[in-house]
Length: 510
Ligand SMILES: Cc1cc2nc3c(=O)[nH]c(=O)nc-3n(C[C@H](O)[C@H](O)[C@H](O)COP(=O)(O)OP(=O)(O)OC[C@H]3O[C@@H](n4cnc5c(N)ncnc54)[C@H](O)[C@@H]3O)c2cc1C
Image (spheres, rainbow, N blue to C red):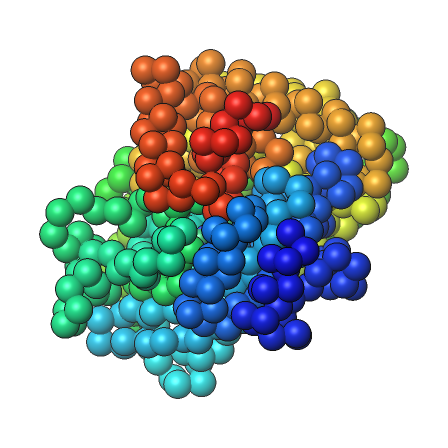
């Protein structure tokens, strides 16, 4: 390992290799630990400047059998941050590769390197006065590529970030450089316009995976619409969830509900507004009576929808009439536009996100409890009232038993709901960490037994989630492992990512 690290240093230069004892190395550990701090600490970090340096790093890693762990900007908080699944790996920090290679206004796409953040891309579009919007996730400092590769979500109509990627350049473990889709043709001028090219489509192999290092990615952007409006709809009772989701399904499938909006309880607005102590001084989850006081104080619903509209003034007025009439079926529903409620921190943050303006408002939720960290649980369900209420009852009960408030809800996908549950706990409290860890682990198998699979998870739970995708004795995982063995026979790339282990480590799952 020592020889390899010295060789990496020669590849990237003295300033871009952070070896044992370097003060910057600690920043690559998981900043929101669920296990004991240091459980996933890397041995060293190396930051290449370009594709040639990436290839040279891979050659050294193959020579010395060094385990690497790749990320773009490594801010995957709630899922392990920059930390590797295998402690003692060398992390490959791609943040230095941050060129915006192309923005095409006519065809509404960009091509970026891994280190390009939503803030950076937004600033670029603004400075060039380009009439294009992006779809940032809640943290604006996220990498455009890293978020998409981990199947992250933004909140505009193009919020399925991986789904709106088009064309990649990937360096395989042996250093071969592949371009996907139309990019496989060296003279193509449609790399970012048509996803499939000719033959099997392989882009999906590089999302949530360890089969290559992505060095360029095309992303479709959204032309800024002539008119935009964001809104909040509040529903007074906990039991309204079933009806709200039933109303939502046809509206979303027909794109009258246009964006990746949210159906969330009181806690989503509360946790970005003030610490929990502002609403209740006790320990453990808020009692029901105090929840109601909080709801009354903030003047919100038990459930709230955040949504947005895009089009012409005429088209959004017509759509609004349909949306309003549909949700008015729920007794007590109230309707607000973002400008009606400037005091609501969550609504204002979502208004920015839904028009593609990156911000960091979400990090207010880390004030909810002292020393806060969070870990996510994200089962996918059909958009039905039965599924939503079944999952909500289970997850709320389990979160509260673990001493946490139910800070979760539903991101509205095209035909499914991402049930996002954020366990927010005091990371300095090992009992709290253990309680949450056991609960998440139990919930992964419990929700799987009910038919709900997690779409994404923290490094600590990757094997649990991979095991829950069990059709035909884990045939999909077995197929991916065969591809892994073929492309990365020395097993140097991100061992254990998404439960995919190289052959030599496969027995050591868990
Ligand atoms: C309060 C809070 C709110 C959040 N809200 C959201 C949200 O709304 N939506 C959302 O999606 N996420 C959310 N997150 C999670 C996370 O912050 C974002 O998803 C963020 O985009 C991930 O970090 P990153 O962009 O630095 O990605 P990275 O850490 O760079 O990448 C994530 C993973 O993708 C893979 N990867 C990245 N780059 C490459 C590459 N070049 N080649 C091969 N594999 C690669 C790696 O496995 C890596 O671990 C939230 C987190 C917090 C703390």
